[in-house]
Length: 275
Image (cartoon, rainbow, N blue to C red; front, side, top):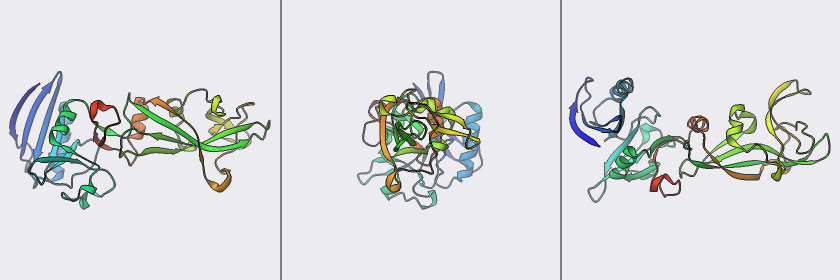
């Protein structure tokens, strides 16, 4: 990897130390704007990098930068011992209210070396679950008797995508809100062993409309919608299984509030503390 350092003032009031590095066919910049630099200037410069095909990591000395998939950024502060710590924000605290000294305002704290090595090692990414990595899917619902044939069938009412990365929590969809094209990404074709019939978008003649519906495990008849929830008004876990996250699923879940920039540690296994 080749590295060089230079100063940049291409945008008015943007004075930034720039580290330029190349790795393979990619050119990567690490920029450290001064605390007085307007955020609007940083965003404008990021747009320039995007047009030029350059990748950039922004290291801010101020905590109030925006959390955005288009702005790979971290806050860098000093530790009590005089070293440097890099902090990555989440959506829990508004950016105007973040404190440089309150660790609970940040979703992930790590050494500057860990951040830089993660960025150049392909372990710095935005989202909740990662394309090509494992995740756990849990189906929640209720056990009911089919009105057509009398067979007892598990009705799936919600799908939880449990990320292995702490701090991302999980993606909870109401079944009726799951895009039809993602159903195949989220569950196996056959869940008969868990007494779950086929789940797909279909036209319901009695309702004169189409929706994602559960089917009876025996006769295939469409089952009632979510207005009939199980005893006690709550859902229970039905089954869970492992999937490999597809690009489409990673893109869809990156729109959820739990999404943020994060560094995966320990070889991106999804099990290390602080991922």
